[in-house]
Image (tube, rainbow, N blue to C red; front, side, top):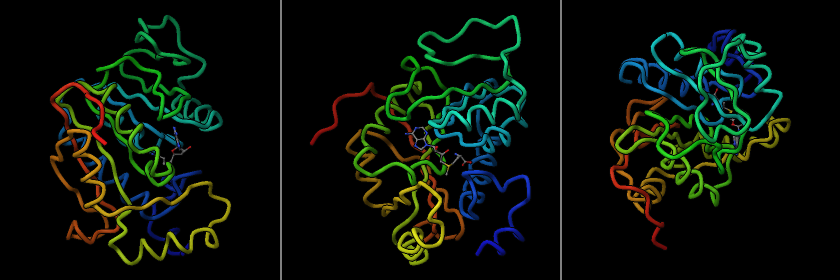
Length: 242
Ligand SMILES: C[S@@+](CC[C@H](N)C(=O)[O-])C[C@H]1O[C@@H](n2cnc3c(N)ncnc32)[C@H](O)[C@@H]1O
């Protein structure tokens, strides 16, 4: 498995936490999609930015304002070093209100904030796009409600929020989830998976519309190992009906 990954995944994409072939393919799909479709000057948040590989891909569009949020401080330090944005260059532009521990680099340079996806340190309606890629695998399913609420709180109305699921209808995903504790015991992920129907139900309960399904790793979205959901919500948040 590790040998196959080494042959297929470009060296610079073999990260610290983003180590798998599927994480690479998922990231590549979202980067291509966003590079082609995000409007000029969009402010984009990636939640669970890891070692910054998605942000690195998106930084090819120099008009985008890119922000990463990550739980682990060692990864925040790593990304700040990689992008050379730490210590903060001076003078700093006006920060976004409620930034918590954030520091914000000069216009158009990526910034990285330590924080928890379940209590985002940003004001409501801050971002033109929110990306959660390879994140749900690490967050236990009972917390997905909170994560979805937070994503749509910080995104502007009618703007895209992206999630990917490991599709439990795909037999390889099912096997991988079962075998993961033996294959890669050093990884702290829960390897949470779900079916696209269950995930669509969850989104509907939050009054969220699914715009597109982007299959990763197979042409048919229903059976693909990973499915990317592009979602939007027009109305302000109300409480999730039980
Ligand atoms: C598999 S990595 C994916 C990294 C990146 N999104 C990518 O695709 O390259 C998942 C990342 O989510 C982070 N993470 C997990 N739970 C989180 C939480 N509650 N809040 C913020 N980040 C979290 C992990 O620390 C890890 O860096």
